[in-house]
Image (cartoon, rainbow, N blue to C red; front, side, top):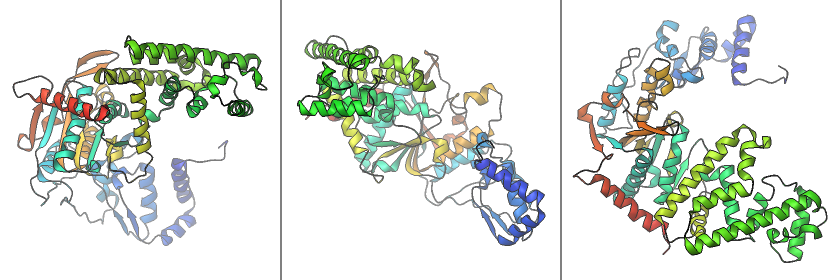
Length: 498
């Protein structure tokens, strides 16, 4: 009210109040809308139901399309009772069950029917298809989230190579956005293009761009764009006028802007504290460059250690964590950088003869590929909630374990598992021809590892419709070694020059 503004929820409530308190207004709108068609009715909230019921009272011409088995937005107000009690709300309604499925094969549909059939409160129906039997649903057990991501990446690459499938035929679904990070790393490692829907891709995050800019300055002190990104992070008092003066002087003297920072006193306005901050930046980068050259010549230490030094010595880490201008996300930003440190260390282990410049080139190439438009052939990564209404010939659902699906919050609060089961049902039915459900045997929690139990929903899939693969341990079948060998081959192919 103070801002004289409303959000979408307010608009619904104001319309409802308008209709209930002004009969003449309601009559006008009832006459205006003779026929009412509502899609995704299972996602309607109470206010939307009441609003629709008032509008439909006059002509009684309302058609609602929905599936109570796909009601997965209770956390944002959707009320599944609206569709379950539809005949009671509209006594003369005719119900038509649309049970033929044109998307999936029978193994996938039979699995979905068996899982959702465990929900007590639902409209009875059973999907069927004439699209053929198809592949059994694969339930794949991996050691941890990293191994799970590596399996997904290798399997996508194998099917792309052997079956000729475009990358756009693959969707990878997960419960929480935090599960995307190991998947991104694994896909990058094997050179599989992807897009992360509904969240920043890892290398698009501000803190990662900052670190990469500092690393590019180490490799090339004359990197103009990288200097512009980091010269005022942490803040060094460089406003637009001072920045323009610095760049003009550097251009006149044919120097890189970082080189000019060695003695910026010749530039108007770059004296006092600002000039001292720039001299300090130049000195820090010079020292870090010496450390980088030492690593390059001796291979003592790690690139991850160098990244940590960059963050510490430039003051970036302190800025992320303590500087109020960075807001409450500072600690999480530093955690992203720590993940980057782990990532670049793993890259160095896989590519022991490569240089930092090779890593930066790999990241830059990926960024340029991401700017080529929306029609790229790429794998889709997204949460299950975001995937409703979409489909892929091959779908992976990762993290099929207790604590993720069903979610730990629901388990801790003793909540109804019906919506969790409906979410799993939605995930299953995104697949057209091939469905792979993966899980880990161990998970990290509060910095410690602990056993991860399989999702109870996996056991609800009939044995006749599923096949089980255990990749969590080495065995006589050589599955794990074969997967590791495949990843090494792919890493050699895409991670090396030539």
